[in-house]
Length: 125
Image 1 (cartoon, rainbow, N blue to C red):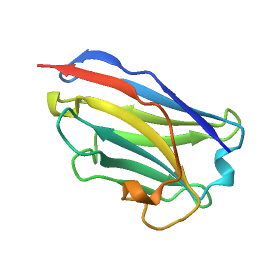
Image 2 (image 1 turned 45 degrees about the horizontal axis):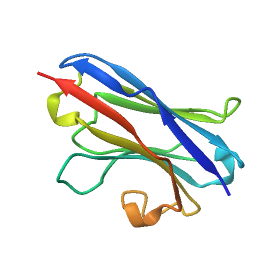
Image 3 (image 1 turned 90 degrees about the horizontal axis):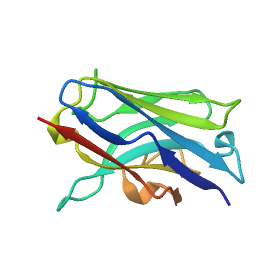
């Protein structure tokens, strides 16, 4: 079983940047077909942000973050990153990383098997 730990969240002004990290222990990310980032704002459902395939590094983004966020992975460090640029107040949320043994349903919370505890991102206007 894998353990996921997110870090890198914090408070930033609109237009700023943050880089989130998701470190895995117990198993490597290469053991999973998909690694995803989701976020949940207060009073809202958890939503898909980005995902990267464990095999061919195919990448998917939500339309709301396309062009601003970049997902990447470092297999040597067993870590997946989410670089977030040009942040907006509406990006404020708890950000979670998750892994899936399936290559499909990458956009859906139910498509993932293991989750981290989340890291808070707050963007002030």
